[in-house]
Image (cartoon, rainbow, N blue to C red; front, top):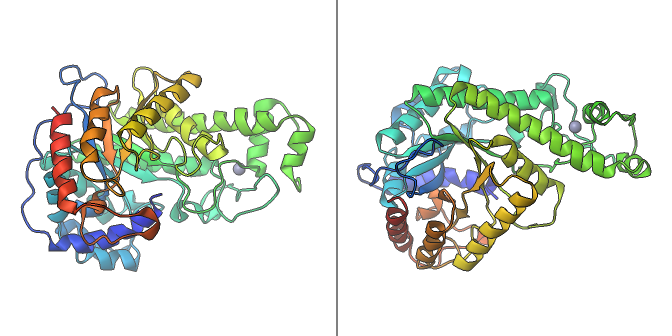
Length: 424
Ligand SMILES: [Zn+2]
C-alpha cells in the first residue's frame, strides 16, 4: 500500500519547494513513548508517515548526492537536488503533529551506515526534526527489491520456493542472513538515533513490494523445519504441499513452524535493538492486509507474528494497522475492537498496543474530529497519518487510491485542531 507513495515522495519533495516559511516548534510537549513514562499518560501520539528526505538539510542532501562512493540512484539524486529543506518541517508543524514516523527511504538495501554521507543524511534528518520539537520513529521497509531481489547477497541463502514448487527470483523471507542484515540496519538506526540526540522508536514495514513469500519451502526452510519438528521432509520435492498433506504436516509446517520462525527473527531484532537502547519503542506496520482482511492467510499471520515478536509484557510493541486508513469513526472503533479480539486470541493483549493508521483521502475533513474522538476515548497510544505527502497540493491523485474531497487546507486545519486536543 505504500509502494506508489514511495515513488510519490519524489513528487512531494519537488512540490514542497513552493512552500515557504520557517519551521516552528510544533506545539505542546508530548509524552515520552517510553514505558516508564508516568506523568503524561493521557497525551496521545499524533504521528505522520514521512521519509528522511523530507527532513534532511540542504547540506546533508547535497553531500549525499555528491558522495563518493555513490549510494543513491540517479532518480533519487535528481529529486533530492530540488528539495526545499524547510517544507517538510513547516507542513508537519502546520498540521500540529508531535511525532514523525520517518523511513530511511531511499537507503534500504544499501550499506548506508558505512558511508559517511549516508550516515549523516539519517543523523541530520533526525536532529533537525528533534530540534523542531518532533519525536522521531525511524523506519525500515523489509521486503523490497533492494533487499530481496538478489539472493546471492546473502551467504547460503536460497531463493524462495512456493508450495507448488514455483520459484520466484527473490530471496527466502525467512533467511537467517537476510534477517542478520535487517538487524544490522536496525541496530545502526538505533545507534544513529543516539548520535542525533535520541529517537523515540524504530518501526519496520513487512509489506512485500514484489513477490509475496510469506510461506517458503526452500531447502533451508525445510532443513530448519525438520530440526524443529523432528521430521524427515525431503528438500528436493517437485511439489512440497503434496508431501506435507500426504504426511498430515501442512499445519505443522505452515502455521506452527512459520510462526516460530517469524517470532524468532522478531525477538532477535528486538533484543539487538534494546541492547543499544533499552527504551526504544518498537512497531510494525500492518495487522491485516487491507484488501484481504480477516482471511487468515500467511501474509496476515506474518504481520501479526512480527508485531507480537517485537513486544514484551514490560514493553509492548505497537502494531500500525492500515485497514483503518479510510475508516469513518464507527469503522475505526470496530477495527480497534477487532484487533484487540485478535490479540486476545493470540494471548498477546499485553504485548502489542494498537496505533491505527488514518488517511485524509475519500473522507471529508470534518470526519477527522469524529475519528479523533475514537482515538481519544479508546485505550490506544495515539494514531499515525499516512502520509505527509497527502497534505501537499502537488502530490497528484493516484487513481485507485482516491482523492481528498475537501480543499487541503481544510484537512491541515482539522488535523491541527485534532492533534492539539489529542496531545494534551
Ligand atoms: Zn525459505
